[in-house]
Image (tube, rainbow, N blue to C red; front, side, top):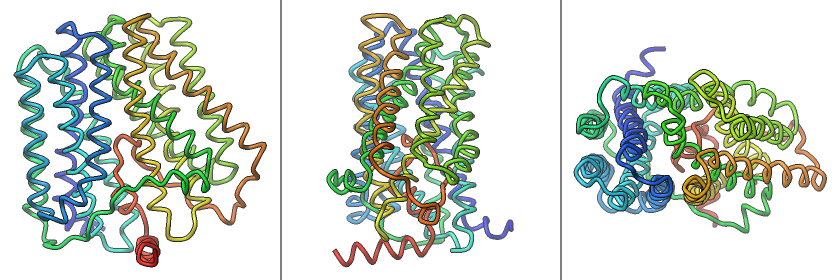
Length: 422
């Protein structure tokens, strides 16, 4: 089995460097920004800037790679991401950080797409699913490790910005070591709202509002934890534990959604998230343990929603369109990612820190109500017609190329045939 992973080991290592740097970058900014006195609104705009840059990277990177090639494009992405992180350490102002965060989001999306393209090219057909699973777990571990690294030093200095920049540069290694000189072209994300809506109104509506809730929490959780009085180690756990819980929750959620109407599973997950939202708002937990327990419950719910929505949409997708459907939903999720931190940052600045969970609660209520209404309007997909649920990173960590990496060779070929026919 090990021999199957040797050709892709360098790529997995490079991806882990990229995500490790991303973990540091994603946590140091809200922690340091809060210490510098940045408002919750300006810190929320960091998430909005990231989402705009990430969406732009998903759309524009395939064209860039087609013009200059994989190696040059990847080198530029990694180098500019490193520069943007170092720039954040030099220019300690909210507006500079917002712009630099957008640049970093663009580069991060582009670099991830190129690594995933290389992995797809290197993976043997019979090993594609296993390699995708390893890739997902490696990235999850790298993000968590990057966030937890902040507990080992002083966040008030230059060190963690430099460390993150170093690992962005180390991510260049896979392109240098890859034996594939001509990987397959990247898949471009296209947003066809009419086609997506005809395919599944629930998926379109829910993925946007899940993007709102997940990005709001993902961007401002550290700010909430810091202002609640948690120490740095607890803040790192508060941001990392929900991601781990969401990854673990996808296993039972996936099994359940393969056996019953996925929309009902989505409602159940959203209800669990809403309970956590309400408890954060009403009891205002103090101390490390109550906050971490509620964060784990909330994370286990919200980060398991996205793959359920994608699986439900693919259940209704015409043959050869599943990758296009997944790419479109990713862009809608990104649209929610633009709005969510903006709403939550404004609410936290004008009301209280707990207003973060008022925003997520509104999003979850809307998902529950609309999905229940759609259940009454449309019968569930037959069990025989369902696609297999696939454990996947959250929408914020996915690119259109992720869907290609996770698909079988037959699905990729069917998608190519459909695109050629149209």
